[in-house]
Length: 316
Image 1 (cartoon, rainbow, N blue to C red):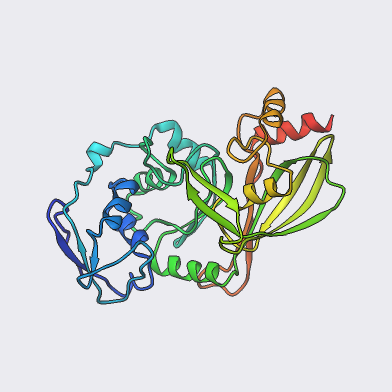
Image 2: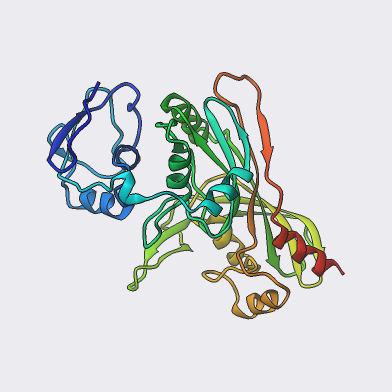
């Protein structure tokens, strides 16, 4: 077992069997609790983190016995970090959909990032760790955008995390979203197979676009309800690329309502007049096989009142 290190000095961490298969960046995010995500990626880019004395990148996967050299880092203490505001704690407690000894499933609120950083004192994971200090292994299984609400899965143990990551890798996790798209679709279904390429603008903003040089990306859209000028669709992910649903919807000429990055300003203004002040994208359900179980289980997160209210107004 690795002894508790002094993070202010360079030190060597020996990877255990529990660490095996984990990406280096995800390991560091877990191990260096209290260190901003941006700083972790900075020391990776600069080559300050070494594995077995060799230079590595963020996607390097650890194996048991690897020697990970970590440079001196100043880590915020719990006293410095403070505690999540009481209203945030109460909100998150109310939005827990399922919890057992290995898993926690939450209906993430829109506007809350999954990680802190970029001026945010707390993301969802930092808040939940502070609320559950006894759960030292609490980790995100996957991520959803800050402006997206809905099903977000966390693991409490490394073995559970590995199992669920393997299900994701084998495309055995069902992810279904609800989105309000511009335009009244005549067709009931539309499958988009368009590769996505990530880039960063001069201003530092992360953008994604359809580009033949990008990674394969497939989304299946199915109409659930039609309104005057809008369609409520279910989007099922066949791949999990950054901003995939948002970019694929815009690629079809039907951007998501409230999307300030890939959407239509005039449509967004119209929807604001109807009370929509956020992105209308909601991770409605998640299907997976819980570790130790043999059957697929599906969990769902209800739409927030703001989204339900908008649908009611559009239907009148």
